[in-house]
Structures are given as structure tokens and as C-alpha cells.
Image (cartoon, rainbow, N blue to C red; front, side, top):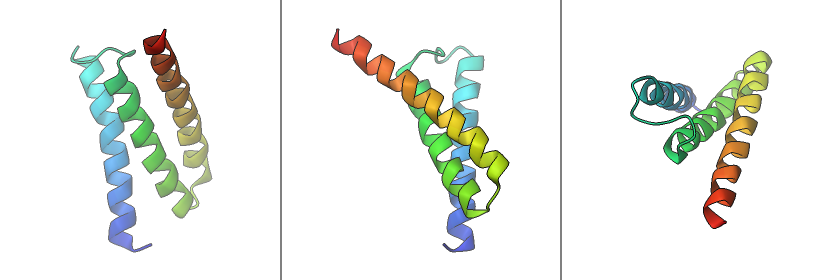
Amino acid sequence: MSGWLLSSIGYVGAGLILLGYFQVSRGGWTGKSSAFQLTNLCGALLLVVYSVALTAYANVLLNVVWLIVAIVAVVRLLLHRKS
């Protein structure tokens, strides 16, 4: 993977997670909103890809856990909407 593409993946992933944090902190989103959870999910996924490519395994672990938390939250949101 080329250097600029890998860097872009990392920056976009970090930007998405920061966007979610910023929106919740300013009251634009709630911690249970689908926008927040999907933003975190996408950001964590991109950071997992980025960290694996860099073999930064501590960051891989952190972002895999972050990703699992986001997946669980999104699944709960989807199940709650169907009921």
C-alpha cells in the first residue's frame, strides 16, 4: 500500500473518531446516536487497517476493542429500531 494512501487512511480514521467526540462534547450528538456510533465504527475500522499496516499492535488492540464496542452499539440500535 502506498505511503500517501496509508497516511490518508490513518488521518481519516482519526478524524472520524475526533469528529464523534467533538459532536458529543458540544451536544450535537448523543452517545447513543446512530451518527456517533457509525462514525466511531468507521473511524476504528480505518485505524485498525492503518495500525496493522504499520505493525503497531498496541494500537491494533485498542482499535479492535473500540471497533467491537461500536459494532455492539450499532447492532443494539438496529435491534431497538426493529422492535
